[in-house]
Image 1 (tube, rainbow, N blue to C red):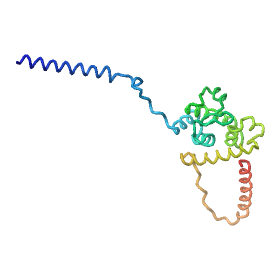
Image 2: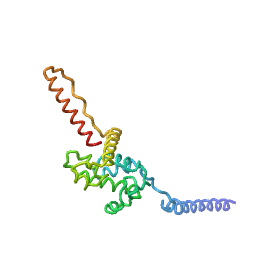
Image 3: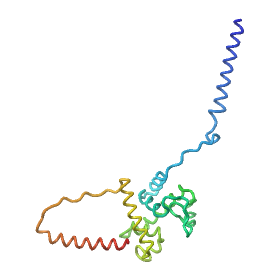
Image 4: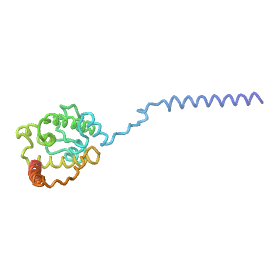
Length: 212
């Protein structure tokens, strides 16, 4: 009787050992690829920030270009053949080694191109608007007109991107605004201050005229 009980216990132990071995070798050691487990895809914001960081430009600017170009839709194709989020032309995408139909590659290539434009026009007085205009109308047009071309579409585009850039910069906390200077009562400088304000208004009007 004792021998039978002992044999039954031994058989049960051997069965458990075999089961653990099967579980370890056939289930736990199966690669993730065989289980069809896909890694989580990054969000669009993460893609934008990664591309902006890689090419050392503002993520708010990249986001502004995407908003103006495609409205954040990766499937958009323009009548001229521009593709995806940042509306890359196929030849531009090929030069940058990117597939414009893949959102991550589209944003990376677009940010790279935008970075190139910013460097190209960095010596201009209005470098940022010039680079934005070049993204829309081409760098040759900006150089030919020594600034924003007189195209209604391009000027509307520049104004829109600049507004979006201010908005996204404030949302991301990257736009640092200086506090207003303290008010000082200095009666003998009133006339001078008024003349300065008149000159400032003329200067502001000129800047608005250029962008509109």
